[in-house]
Image 1 (tube, rainbow, N blue to C red):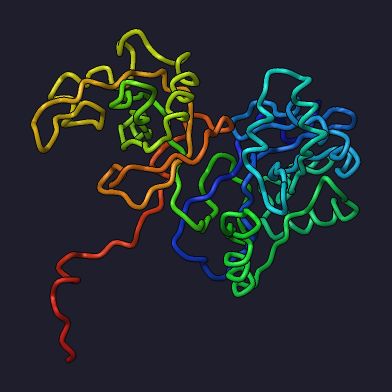
Image 2: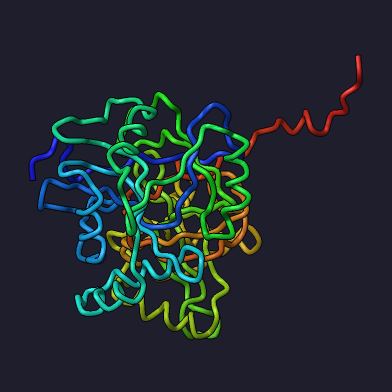
Length: 357
């Protein structure tokens, strides 16, 4: 493979916002696996968000991509599976399976599609420095004869239409709107787009567990996010699993259990002074003054997506809700930058009556 933009490429990312900004390019936010497709004639590679190949997990896409894409190109998009008239993320997770026979069976049963929304290279030309508006035109020209299972993501510059998409598309499993500046160059790995989602979610590192009070299975997952210094901070827990799910989780996480906390990011939790500089489990309770010793350290290698209501300082205010595993996410990318920053108010301004002049 010899392309002007070579794999691996970290896709351009989005930062959250509370409302749709004006004067931008708008697309629906797809609930799937982010993927960058590299094609050089007969050679084709589907790269994941973390740079690892996804090609073997979606064999049904290879033929469709070769038929739809130009001979030499690099295309950014999303792999999705629709089931029952809406997007089905669980069906995508089922594909990450070591057995090729199982993958091929699922490819026939629940075939995937690729939704293209950006063009990074065409022929011998890199488009990374080309403004988005021009890349979009090049994408629609290059893929004008495309057909299932490859699609071009609908886009608009009409903010009223974008607001309609935000309200209407949720029923189809899409989870918001993405807004992109029209003059934006493609900046791999940077959060320079804007996403407006229907709920606050975060991708967190699962770095430990607490056993359920019954003694059976997982009571809660201990969640971490990396701060700007590269330190994994404990940000809260997700819990409220059924008895069956508690047992399943313990089985799933057993290979990651560590014999001791030595070498773990929270290894110094027993040192009271350490809690003054970092968030970690086992911190002294504000009610009892004692430490909770019941957590079990895990190698911080798995990522889950959780729903949360809001932050208090640098951690979740309440227990988060487990949504799903994210095998397509790199734990090292799970940082605070992904979190929505609420509008800030000065408490004095809220509590002080305002009198008309």
